[in-house]
Length: 201
Image 1 (cartoon, rainbow, N blue to C red):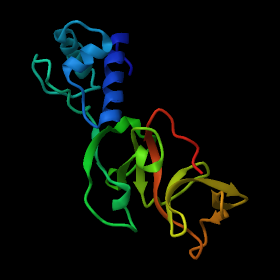
Image 2 (cartoon, rainbow, N blue to C red; image 1 turned 180 degrees about the horizontal axis):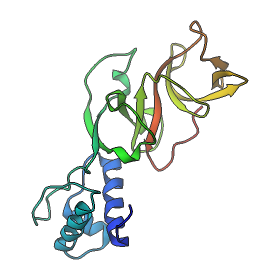
Image 3 (cartoon, rainbow, N blue to C red; image 1 turned 180 degrees about the vertical axis):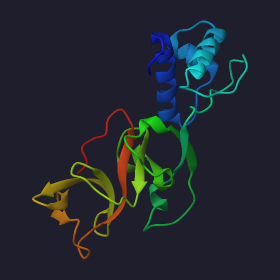
């Protein structure tokens, strides 16, 4: 966020947090209320300056209810219900969420991204963004797996020697290099739009 004033960073941080929580942008009124600003025109001027510096893209006039649009470089990601994922079903997304590209760490194919509500995974409110059918896994990665005996859940990738495993409380180490034992890996967590991502089992 180089080149932004402290107040402009506060405005942009609030917009990013709001979008993480609600999947949409706040209105001028909501920004003003959250930051203790008396005037919508003050918010408007901050947004204009942030936009000129390349951190935000928005359309609007001076009416307080106008929403702030997506950032200049956003990805539109489908949000699914857990029940719509393989092997349970193949339905349609329940909604889409716009995600600033700069939140992602490293190159990821946006067409392979999807999001799940945190609560469907037993996590706090928010969204978990995953890469579908990951090509590579690294020790420490959190992955969403399906196993017939356990259903769908998050697990952590571990390394032992040169082999990768999923650590499971009931079944010990599940190897990822054996097709007969490998669980169905539905996605690799690339971003948790939550306050924290609890330790995966």
